[in-house]
Image (cartoon, rainbow, N blue to C red):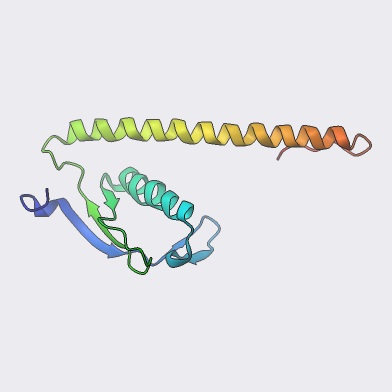
Length: 130
């Protein structure tokens, strides 16, 4: 794919640490599997696509979790950026739907837990899930 189109690789870089929305920094070597998955899909792939129109991929996985080489890839690899853009948009919408469902399921569980707690402590001021 890249032999005939080397300009599709926009940049390469190492992934060493990540800062969350609160400014806390964590070494990527200390990430759990779920944190790596979330970071790869949401932060690198979709975050980059939404900001630049390019995607970031990790072409290989190193089992020792010491090297994270990333490639920033142009999304017009097939020569029809409109088509690929539409495909990526559909994936974006489906992931958004997935995220919305997970979020709503989490809220529903918190509401149930809160209601149960309130039913077990009727003499206290009722809590909300927030």
